Image (cartoon, rainbow, N blue to C red; front, side, top):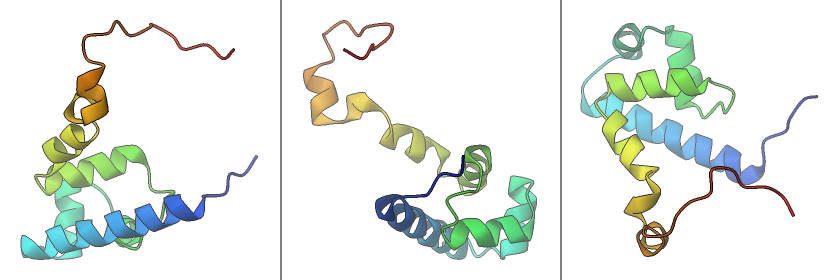
Length: 100
């Protein structure tokens, strides 16, 4: 079954792609140089920078690594870096969450 991206996901993908393109330019890298560093094709870099949400997660992470921003991505997704996560940090998390 084909999944359709929500408008919110499409917008986020576009913004992240633009951010990655800006990082690439700040490092004064061509798209081919970044592609070589990330072990992907130049076309894949173009798709990612243009906000294609179908680019693989692994590719996204490889590009972040090549741009020295992988640690920032990991930190941005750390729940304990948020107010909510810090409030709940002392609670025991369930191994699985089951629907009720």
